[in-house]
Length: 188
Image 1 (cartoon, rainbow, N blue to C red):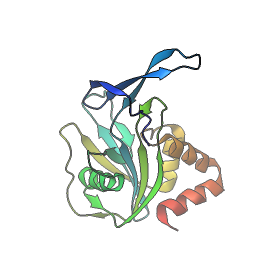
Image 2 (cartoon, one colour):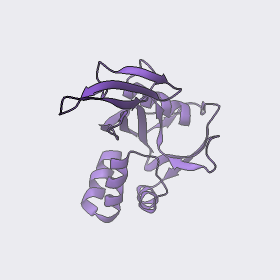
Image 3 (cartoon, rainbow, N blue to C red):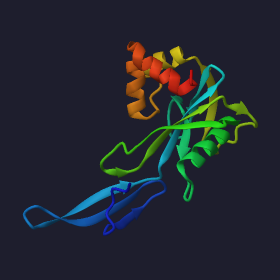
Image 4 (spheres, helix red, strand yellow):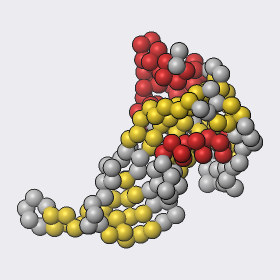
């Protein structure tokens, strides 16, 4: 659901971000200019291959150091979230899955019109080589659930939805939350 009112005017169009402004009546009857930023929605995928979870060690030209992340990226114009998740998974990994489940869809900021959707893609199979953007270098890592929990707890796997990251930190310490996530990811 968009946080930008219909009366807003776009005052800046960037490559990723747009800026919107509108006049808002205040409680005392005066008016003030309000502003929000919008950007394309993004998808993140917890992908399994057998009993392993696939994460990425990714390098991008604007970052000094490689970083660890889930599979994912931006949703293209006219694309729905699940289509984007499947496309990004195929492009970045060369894998496809027939077993997808939406875990969450949330807007992480009150000032940015942007949705992050987190999916699980179970039992993925390799069907092609990676097809990376010119600004991506991606190495795939296949890790156990315990290794993922340890990495998240240490702050090493940061590029993932904040609420999922917090849940996985709790899963590191709480057997009931751990079981919930293992069941969700692996359906076991």
